[in-house]
Image (tube, rainbow, N blue to C red; front, side):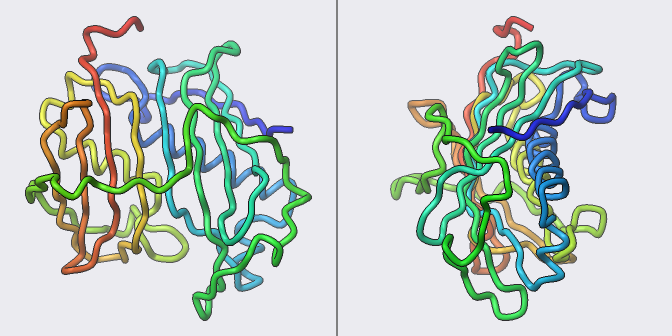
Length: 246
């Protein structure tokens, strides 16, 4: 069973071309997961009051077609059978039953006070809508190839409007942050993105953004750092926007 919420692409979620921003896909996916926890209990904030928090470890997103300004769509999210210390969650975004985007993610459940990592068996997720994971996208950790040349392309300061209850940069800002450092992004459409979250980006910290050139498979790799500490590692695949059927 999958939990579903209905949404509309508001004007502020669209870019200069009138299509939904990359970060908005993750925003609605994450909001749907939050709503699932809110209605099926315990909610994210009830968990936080219990001294627990779900922390995103990695996510793989594929976008098949662009949603446009004022499109009505449905966002689905569900827990997947999990084991060890990895809680798996999947997402879909559909319009008129057509699949527009899909994602698979891995989460850790931690103790807020001591940072301890909880096992799947330590927390009962049976009250949450659960279904099998999608096989189109994976929640497996990826690594930037060792011979990849990453160059410093800019810096980003974390401001108050971007932080969550933990006072860290909210997950949903990362796709747009990454894409802001892709050359000619206004003429491209992102079809795939993978992000591994290594450490948090606290309020008022400054990220250094390192990027590769596209490889033979069209993948662009990123690493963000705070000082000597890696924040995220990511890859993006994009295609020319004028070749899409929208």
